[in-house]
Image 1 (spheres, rainbow, N blue to C red):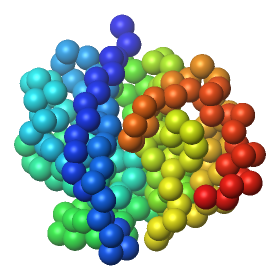
Image 2 (image 1 turned 90 degrees about the vertical axis):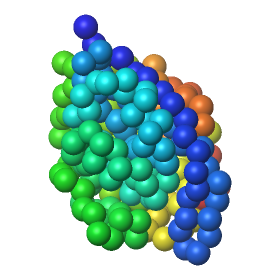
Image 3 (image 1 turned 180 degrees about the horizontal axis):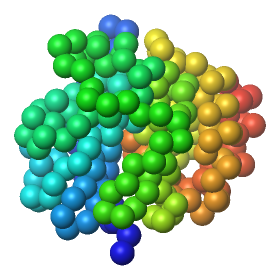
Image 4 (image 1 turned 90 degrees about the horizontal axis):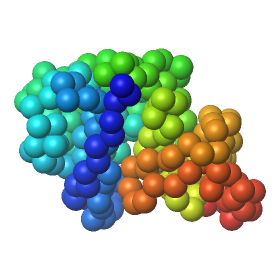
Length: 209
């Protein structure tokens, strides 16, 4: 039996380049009744612990190191013993939030994480952040896109450590090659599908944002 996907929304702030904004974040939990991983430990370790409901937490996977996606990671790790996994290219961003606490392991393009008998393949998708990753779970028909791809377009690239041409290349090469029916579970807001977003790539490029 494939793992199931649980979802909760946590609220807090995102700060970078001297600005702070209120945000709601999607936290995704993938597993079965016994074990799970958390994708993006955002804002509220207690709420995430409650959603785990006693399951063994095997890993905290960070899609990137903006503070709103990692602020609760050390507390959740301390409460569960889970390892925090991050792509090494996002270490500079991580250190802005947690200068005294390092991730426990690295993510790499093509790496496979297995939870409850279900494989999730790491896709390195820089652009929104240098170490941004997505997690493709073909058995579940889904990709967890972090802030790389949203309903309606790519993640923001107007702040430090981000680059618009890079995120477009990442989406074109790593995400739009997935089956069109693949459900895109995003870091903020509503889900979408690869097929719904693919026709808009040239429009995004012409808008250049």
